[in-house]
Image (cartoon, rainbow, N blue to C red; front, top):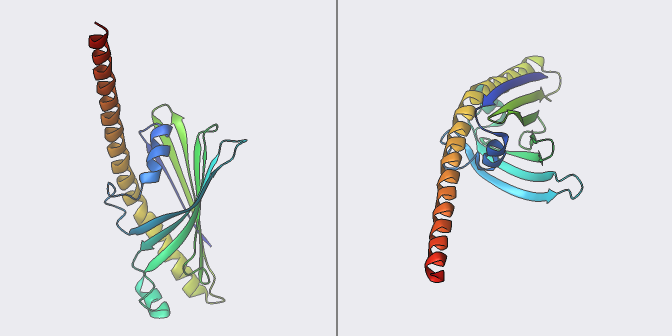
Length: 198
């Protein structure tokens, strides 16, 4: 088993990050073009805790290392990941737990991501992935598979942060524009009411 971990800080509030997280794989993020689809399977809110629990199926297309193509064939570049997320408004955390579906007989990849506020204007991102190759006694192949996936996580970490920063910036701009539109509509409605009352 190999482990990958990463910690980042986003200069956005927890509210902004937890809201924009649902748009992480949208056209605003040109670094996530490998994500083909995100399908929501279920979404519930626990009436006692207020925790929003969401299950999603994420379909990606990523090239695999050449040695894996030789073992498994070249048609395995589309992969699916099952993600369960928990948004806890009281504790102000977003926790996402994901596991691969594709190749699960050869590899087990379990990833946990947690967003939590550092202060009113910054949010911490903590990522941990456990990668375990399940291919019997072939230690050299197991090590190669695990090392390749750790390298992919490492390479994707910088791209992921850059892409999510773009989503956060666009979300902030769009929400500011919407607040401004609502403010202008309210001012116009009030001036109409004043004229009608006069």
